[in-house]
Structures are given as structure tokens and as C-alpha cells.
Figure 1 (cartoon, chains in turn orange, red, green, brown):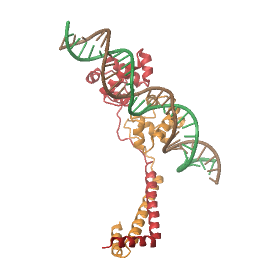
Figure 2 (tube, chains in turn brown, blue, purple, green; figure 1 turned 45 degrees about the vertical axis):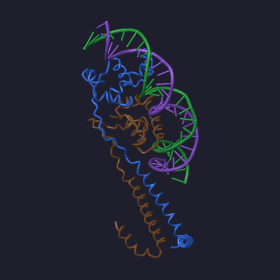
Figure 3 (tube, each protein chain N blue to C red; figure 1 turned 90 degrees about the vertical axis):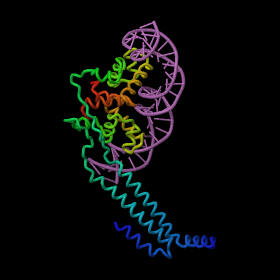
Figure 4 (cartoon, rainbow over the protein chains, first blue to last red; figure 1 turned 60 degrees about the vertical axis):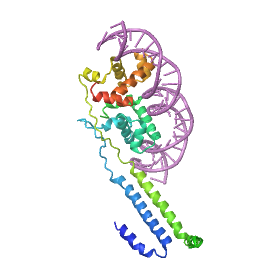
Length: 134
Length: 134
DNA sequence: TAAAATGCCCTACTAAAGTACCAGTTTGAG
DNA sequence: CTCAAACTGGTACTTTAGTAGGGCATTTTA
């Protein structure tokens, strides 16, 4: 980027209008950088590839969308189910997904209803029996 | 040098170029907002589990006394481990074994230490990975 | 037989998990 | 656009789980 260059150029002019120009330059740079960052991070949404995040090695493993849809388990819920099945606590799942623990609890609670279980250990068992997780 | 003078000058400049400074503040705010937005939109990215959990589907399944002894897991502890792995709560295990829930907790706590885990979900996973339970 | 180990149970906690209910925001389909 | 579903986050709980420490009786075993 030519940011560094531009900064250098401006420095020559800063002599008299130090405060205003400096502040303005900083402001503009930050604004541009901020907006650019925001937009850049905003578009990956569409480009997003639905690559199976699950790296389960288990040979022959398939998400089995049929059962997932049949049970009405959403994509988000499924992600959480996997992390839960890997032995993580709600807090750990929340941290890993950059979500609130409240959100995790909500999803898991809904998951329990859909899997018709009362505890996470049962949920994992159930999901395994149904072949929707490793 | 007149410190007072400098202060005076600064004050005048602030007043004079209030617009620029205001713009700068706005820009910075926007920049922060933009970055925040960008990060917010960034997090939903796929959360992946990189740790492949090699799980062997028993078939046959033998207690594998070798590992049990190696870990120092007693008969009673093993029984409880199985029930725990079947999704039962401590209370349910206690009822089924005609024992106090306190006893169950004690055994499970000792099991955790021997399996080097912190939660029952991990304990089940671990035990499965080591082939000591189905 | 004395010393371990095991099994059982307890109090008294702290920490997670789970439930119920609400509410704002996004998003996708019609 | 509009509606519904999905997603997110929250409060305020109740319930399980888990920890720390101890006591006491019954096997094992050195």
C-alpha cells in the first residue's frame, strides 16, 4: 500500500497547520481503513463455501442431512452439537464460536428438545446412534 | 517560554477549526464502528474442529483389563463409568446401583482423575478412545 | 497380622448445566 | 415488502455436576 508514502508527503505540509492536518489525516486514514475493513469482512458472506466443517476422519461418515432436516436441527445447532460431542463445556463452545454462553445454552436446550433427551451425554449418544455425528 | 501563551494559542485553534476536529471525531467513530462491524461479521465464519477423534466402533468389545489396570480403575468405578457413558445422571446411577449419590460422585471424581479429564462428556470420549468401553 | 486398597457415605461447598421466558436482529422465501 | 424461521443475547432461576475433605467398614495382600 502507498499509505506510508502518503504519510510522508503530508508531513511536509504539516508545518503550519499541524493540528488540523494531522488530525484530519489520521481521521481520514482511520475512517478509510475502518470502512474498508468493515466492507472487506462483510462480503466473504456470499463467497462463503459450504465446505463441511466437520473433519471427522471416521471413514464413511456423512452428515446425513436427511435426519438433520427431519429433526429440524439447524446448521448452527449442529455445529454446537459437534463441539458438545467433543467434550467441550458450554463456556468453551461459546469462546470457540465467539458467542455468548447464553446463546449456547439456548441452542443446546433446543437441541435437547429436538433430540428428545435431557442431558448432554444423552444428546451425544443419541446423535451418534442416529449417525448424525462421528 | 510562555507556557500560558501556548495554551492560549491551542485554544484558539481548537475553536477555529472546530469543524475539522469534529470531522475527525466522527471519522474515528465511523472507523471504530466499521471495524467493529467487520469483526462482528467475521466471527460467524465456520468454526472447525481440527482434532480428529478416532473412535472405534467396538464390535465385540472387550473390557481390556490391561488398560483398566494400567489406569488403576477399579471394578466399581468401571461399572459406574459404563452407566455414565450410557447417559445416566449421578442420581440415576445411584438408584440403579442402590448406592448413595455421594458414593457415585466420589467414584466419578476418582475416575476423572484417573482418566485425566474434567467432565463426564470427556470421560466417556476418553474411555471410548482407549477402548475400555463400547 | 498390620497396612493398603477399596468401597461406601457424609458435609459443605463452588461451578456448570439446564430451564423458562423474553426480545432484538438477520435472513430467506414467498 | 412481509412473514417466519433462525440466530443471538439476556434475566432469573433450579438442578446436576464436580471438588475438597473427612470417617468408617470390609477386603486384599505384603
